[in-house]
Image 1 (tube, rainbow, N blue to C red):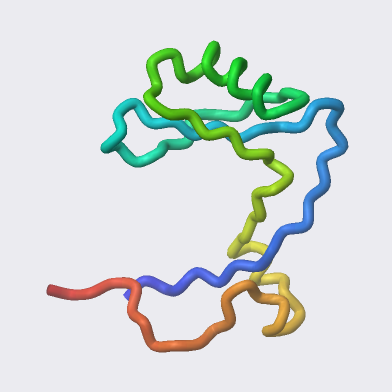
Image 2 (cartoon, rainbow, N blue to C red):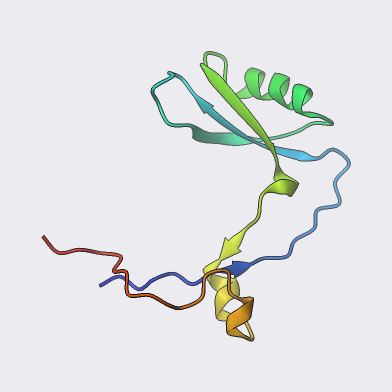
Length: 101
C-alpha cells in the first residue's frame, strides 16, 4: 500500500520586478492542458505573447496564470506542521491509494 501524502501550505514571497506567469497549453482541442513553462511579464497579454514566442507556436489554446495566484502544498511542509489544523488535508478517511486487482 502506498502511503497517503500529507501536505501543508508553503509560504513564499517573490519580490520580482515583473510577475511570473505559469503557462499551460494544448495542441488539440481534445488534448488535456500541459504545463510548458514560466515567463515574466507585466500583464497577461504580454505573458501570452512571450509564451507564444517561446513555447506555443502552434498551440490550439494557451493559458496564462499569475504565479502569485498559485498555492503550493508540500509533503515536506506537512512533516514540519505543528498541529493537525495546519495541514491542508487532515489525516482522515480510509480511502486506499492503490488497489489490487
